Amino acid sequence: MRIRRHGAYESRNFNMTPSNSDSLPVNEQGIIDYSKIKMGIKTLEDAVIDYPLKRVNRNFTDKETILRALQSGEAASLKQISKFYYRTSGIYARLCRYLSYMYRYDWYIVPYVAGGDTYPTDGEKGDISARDVNKIIDNFFRTMRYLDGFKAKAVLKDIALKIVVEGCYYGYIIHTPQGPSIQELPPEYCRTRFKKNNRHAVELNMRYFDDYYPDANYRMQILKLFPEDIQKGYKLYLKKKLKPAFSGDSEGWYLLDIDCAFKLNLNDDDVPIMASVIPAIIDLDEAQALDRKKMAQKLLKIIIQKMPVDKNGDLIFDPEESQQLHNNAVRMLSRAVGLDVLTTYADVQVADMADRNTTTTVDDLQKVERAIFNEAGISQMQFNTDGNIALEKSIENDAAMMSTLCDQFEDLMQMFLINFNKSPKKIFYQVQMLPTTIYNYKEMSKLYKEQTQMGYSKMLPQIALGLSQSSILANAFFENDLLNLVTVFVPPLTSNTMNADALAQQQTGRRNTGITQIRDTNSDNTQVGRPEKSDDEKSTKTLQNLESKS
Image (tube, rainbow, N blue to C red; front, side, top):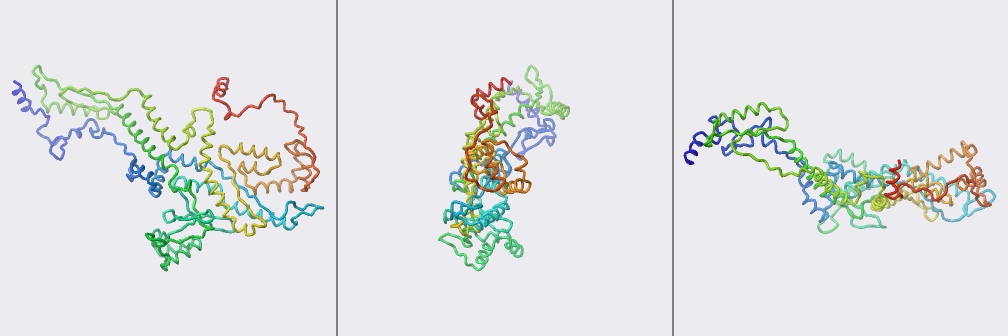
């Protein structure tokens, strides 16, 4: 009976292959490709969602390749990978910009004058003549104006971003009457093998001009834009005089002027400082792609129409009739979104393996995202703050990591003044950079103001707020000497604004030695007890109590 029924099924074409089999999709082996059967306006194959990480160089998205590059310290490969993720990953780009733009790069000049401890005043004779004093002041203003032409804050931020993203920065200093400028050099054609006076000795391979500028006329035009030192090196390269320096070396390497060429990096390493975060970013992308697939699956619905059989198990409808019923349902639901049709003779049961707990899915993604910031060593609350608690310690750690770059910038700006420090035994101009960040500059300005009350520099509080040293002096001269605002706006004589003798000194420009004690006449302060702490100094419990009262 079973054999006869099987033959009946076979005679009735149980495999649902109609006589006009051309209407069904067939693969290369001549077998029906059920994944191509229409189920609405899509096929089964269309329902499989594929979210590739990035359609680019596979090495950029292969976690194993990146880990091998990190282990072996392949700076050139990691530089390209880092640049790719800076352009494509919002998290990575924000981490790089956060570190690069953290410092404000506020600077000022300190003249070290030799030859005396006192300066001449009316009726006095100091160790330095009045003529020398005027000369020192003139040179001081020339030095400030020269460095102002560099636009340090904007340029140094761009250089810092390149160092964080690419790992290092090569440049050449060009001195112009308007101020110093920097010619960026290609890192792929630069190297440093030793140092002199704690500075990198930079070598440039002159093949760079042949590789990037094959047209001879255009190459010579570009070459004229470079400093004379580099032009000299290229002429030696054309004469075949730049021989390999050691066994296995290539020709074309030219040692640049040690006083002009420089190299900057972090931790004396050319590997991008945030490169170790990239594998965690790949994990996050894969987790997000998987989560999107799970979300799409939740939206899909399948209408299953089961063809009936009689009590003997025989088919009631012919395969052609079943196919027609299937096609009718497909046409009727062709415009339905996320709804497909399946026609079958078998019992169908769908087992849902997904976790219906949405909180678990969200928490899994948050764990992967937190891993990125943990790998970077930067608190996630820097970018997504969940409370009012400031993250001073985390910011201070990040600032400490970037402080070495500020020290290098300070040395770089000192190199700009080589023409102003030709007589260091008489006077030496030193560039110093304040440790002000976008997070602490207000606090630093207050600290400098407190030091001013002790007799220290009067310009540092304003420099910490972002003003240049030259603009401070120019405003003071214009307001006090030309507009004579010092006689118009007279502050109360307190310890904060100095006493009458000090005010007279500002008006006359003289230094009086008979300054007596300074009395604080500001007795209107009726505050009792300890001053209130700022929000960043308050504990979590205190902040919660204050929020509940408001």
